[in-house]
Image 1 (spheres, rainbow, N blue to C red):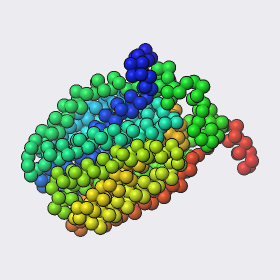
Image 2: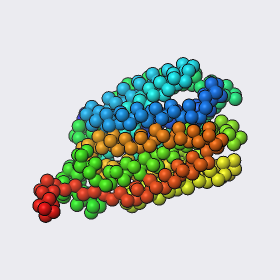
Image 3: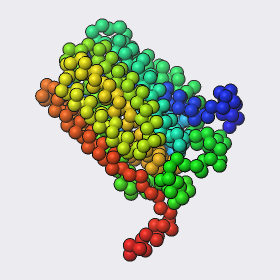
Length: 441
């Protein structure tokens, strides 16, 4: 508590939760070299080893099996030992994975390296960081998550063109192996100092969510939340209670179906564009554009989530994302239309992201957020297991991505409809549940 109080005074009273937003942005940037730049690595590996798209896509599929098994464990560990320790462990594991990646000379070694990198990123990334921010914010939850995501996209603006320059197989500036090794060393070096800045919950340091005073923490932003608090003063669902609601499954499956398109783009956009005559660095710039637009709309989405129903906002942004994919399918070689795709995709991807995480906190509370998010990610990982290899297989079978991306766009739109149907559940007290049971009988 002394440390945070001293830091807050030096920062002119800035609530430490906002410092954590910036710190979490930096940590989340670690996902850029692994996932957002995935297609760049695939182009370089395909050029050197001749592996086909299906073989390369299986690497991502294997990580979904791993995440599907470990997601609930990560959620449990986050609630049990906290984000701080997981970030430290995760960055060390990811650093070791990138060092192994730099030594790849066989396909199976690539798979192992990718699994290790993905494990490290999972332990230090989305789930524990989101849980931490959910603990530090209630009223400003959407904005905090939006700014955190936006900051990580800013790192992507710098990293993606740099990675494309470094690993481009046609020019050979650094090469993919040396670049991977440099990244591995970097993650190992920053693991301890960055994790020391993490704080799990404001109450552990005598603070309150949003920087509120004890009296103001009872004030809520809308009548629905106030009603929920009257029914249960903590407003917190257990995992079992959350899983018995329709909203849990609508959000879990709907978010999963929209994420299917995102990961497929991360994997196959650069190969698709190079097939159409774009250079790898040009493909990198397309990724940079949708990353830049998504950075802006992370903030806009977070702002909107505090003023309109989050399920409505997710439907709108997710539908825009689905439409962007159809633009790419229709005009894959037209430069102007490809960049239109990038803008629309960035709007949809960026606007949905903070809402998809903050809505779970709004609906299910803080106490068991990590467990709920971990179980909620299982359907996503099941669907993601097949998405990228499916697109790769369809390419190897047909020679293009058209049908694969059309199917993925349709799934995306269906997911948007499910998100729209996710209404906020009400948590009844034990006495109310007993009363309802008696009335039903």
